[in-house]
Amino acid sequence: MLLCKKIKLNVTEQDAATLEFMQAKCRSLYNWWIMKLRDGEKWPGWRIAKKTLQESKRYDPELKQVYGKLLHEVYFRLDAAMAAFFRRTQAGEKPGFPRVRPRHGFFTLVYPGAYITIEKKTLILPTGGGGKHGPKGYPNIEAELTEDPPQDYREVAISRDGRGDYYASFSYRVKEEDQHPGEVVAFDLGIKTLATGVNEQEQFYHIGGFKGGQWYNRQLDKIRSKRDKCKKKSRRYIHLSKVYKRVAQKKRKKQRDSLHKASHLIAHKLVERTVVIGDLSQRQMVMKEHQERNKYRNRAVFNDWGLYTFTEMLKYKCHLYGKELVFLDERNTSKTCSGCGNLQTMPLWKRTYCCTNCGVVMDRDENSAVNILTRFLARRGPHTSSGACGVLHEDQSGVEVMEASCPVQVQPQIFPGPSCSSTIAA
Ligand SMILES: [Zn+2]
Image (cartoon, rainbow, N blue to C red; front, side, top):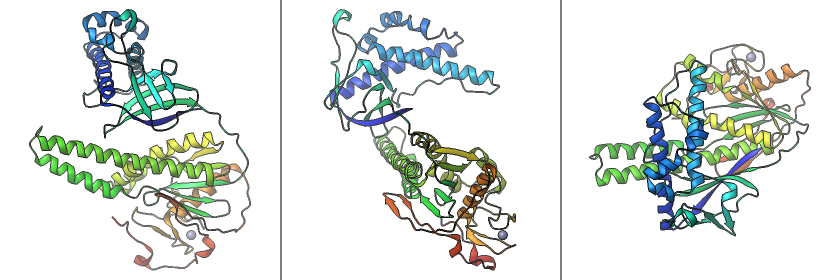
């Protein structure tokens, strides 16, 4: 399968200027086409569009200073954008027309692997001009790689993040591991803990996600409100915008990092054979049903954990490590008692499942995880389960298996009202 490794680049001021120049030129070529297409011109496909490059170069001689392969990539991207647009229109959707790329963003520059060279830790990116094309306006870029690049890379994309750092993303191929027999672990993806898992031995795993989200949100709100009190385009306004971008980037990075660690932990270490998780496409419905779509919880579910990103990571990591990933309809899994099958309403703030029928008291997420596992096993056929119980602790900067317990330890008892329900500490 194809993977991508993103490596930070150290570039000199001059090389940074070259990169900025080239991305600006590529973007303006892209935007020029988008404007034309928006005015009703027909997209001729990349083959024919590419032939107009000479004409464009005559119109804007500065394009000659941009490496040709990067300009070709612009046509490929236009082609992909238009193809996606038409595909969605044909499917009966109402997609927005491909958009003009804003000036504040960085137009990612994609080099085919064959056209770059790496000497020890220096990545050499060619620029346009030279030879028969006339004098070179910008010398080739020599950027220092902060990590070792993968072998046999295919494409290299140069990008810039919100902090103004440059990165090179190498795409490369790796061989997947073969599938091996072993345990099934079912996971419930939640709000309070990122994932709660249970295996066939009824051993529980609680995997916490990135915990600094609220702190970052508060900081970001503060910065934004300060900024919005300033006069637009004033020096302070621009400064605060920069700070905002930097902090937001830091938050995104930390989130992503912890999702990578959590999914790696699940796909590589915890699970032997199969990972079962609830189908997230049902999630929206569950939220509607609960009528609890307040700002903070939405932020918590859809922005701060990034459950969608998490499942995407799980998908490829499971594939890579030879594990099977199964999506299961998770309807009613949080409402059903895992002991007796009793159905009762579970508002999101109720963190403990107290069965009114058989008196089982369980953590909400653990209960759902058991239900997902039983649903999966029922589908797959008979199984036996023994009562082993172990405790697992793992701590890797923000990602931890907080505890592993066994339901045998939880004594079935009947709790009156408030003592067995706790609200989410907001
Ligand atoms: Zn029950």
